[in-house]
Image (cartoon, rainbow, N blue to C red; front, side):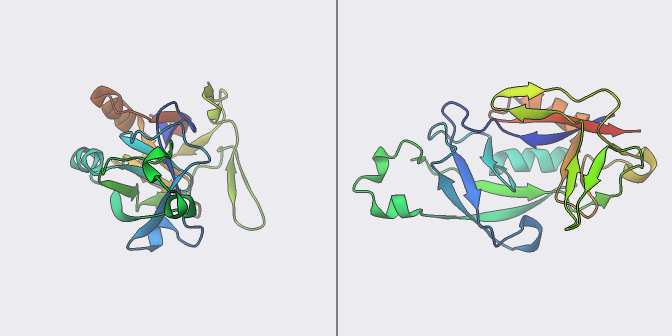
Length: 200
C-alpha cells in the first residue's frame, strides 16, 4: 500500500495560509499558537485544509470526519493571534490575505511512530534531521512524481491497521492510500497528497 504526505499548494489562488510559533511543536503543546500569514497567502478563503509549515491544520468538521473513519489521529486546538500588520492596519478588512470569516480550525497529528525498513532512501544528518530521497515533491504548483524504487518503506507487520503514523525520531508524518481515497471522495479543498513510499 502506498503512503503519502498531506500538504497544500503554497499560494494556492484564493486560499489563506498560516504560520506557527517557532517555539512550539504540535505534539508537545496543549494549544498551538498560529497567525494568518501574508507572505505565502493566495487569498483570504479558508480551505478544508490550511497551509501551515510545520503542522497539519484543517477545519474542525474535517478532523471530526477523519477521526470518525481513522481514529489514530489526535488534535490540538489553535490560538489564532493577530499579526503586527493586523494590529496597525487602519482597516483590517482590506488586508487581502486576512480571512474575515470565523471558521473553527484544529491542528492534527498521528501519535504512533514506526521505524522504516533499511531499503528506505533517507539521509540523516548529525543533528538528527531526516531527509527523504526520491519521494514525490512539489515545486510551486507542480508535483514531481516519486522516483521508481525510491522513497520510504515500512513493514506491514509493524504498521498494522494504522492509517496515520510518523517516522520514528522525526517530524515526518504519513497517511495511507485509504486516507487519500477518503479525502478525495469527500471533495476536500486545498489538499494535496504526495506519494512518499509504501507499506510492504
